[in-house]
Image 1 (spheres, rainbow, N blue to C red):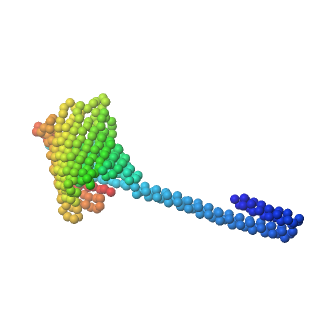
Image 2: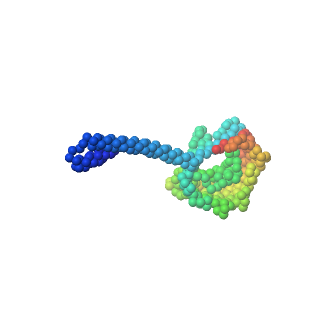
Image 3: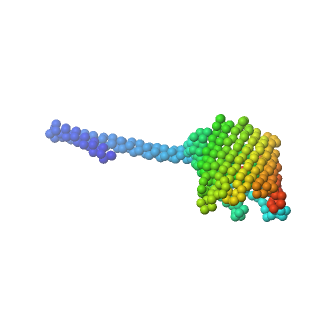
Length: 397
């Protein structure tokens, strides 16, 4: 750049000198001196222009680097603001007396248990698209070890509050709905989930929404049927749905339906029956005060692949009452079920609990609870009883 500018300046000076020389036959010493002075002045101007150009280039480079850093920071800020990490931990320290036909089993004794630990990551791409990944940690007595599952892994498209579509594993229509009104999931599963006539999540296509200002809510799903722990294939999909209505913000009426083969209709071992389940619930909540009743009836839930057919039914009544402004809450629950109305009509499952809950800090609460569970039939061919007392806790963030 400098060479080109200098060459142009010298060419201009030489042209001026040639013009002068053409006018005079021989240049004088004064003419030569003036030409040298002009060339020197032009060199000084070129030098000044180059210095200013270099300085501006450095400013441009620095500004570009600053802009790149700002872009990186903005991208990082968007990533942090649009991504949320959450967790829930259910744990207890209890003493159990477990017996089978009056004889104590190895389940008896003291233990500190981690019942569940969920770790979730939510990321929002924009106002309509988002995704979630939630892991589930638990102890498995079948292998005497801990296991980690993927409980939720889905992509979500939200058109509006009236229509939300999810693909993957996510909450099913009924069990999480019942848990949200029961409010004591860390103490015990709700009725259908406790008796294994339902589960909380599965793989499939899920749609849900709120209508009529949020007072009417629906949820439907086409599922694999095996539950979130087992995403294996079957010959067809299962279907679950729920419709709930809230006359007020504190009350709800809900009905749920399920039909399918629970993922057991295989090519080499086809299903012999279709499992069906219907659920009803009415509930009230106002702060820590809750009251609710749930009922279910199921056909062939455990007999999809057997020649024999069977039915089951049961109901659950729960209530809690806040004792003070600090959040201390007295609660109780009673379940009464017939797990096998056709094959073992005298078999009855009875469960109840009684406890006091108190908050320790935001996101942390403890409860002192007594639980009793028993399953008996008239002939005592099945006679199980469990009494448990201790402290249960929940930690969430």
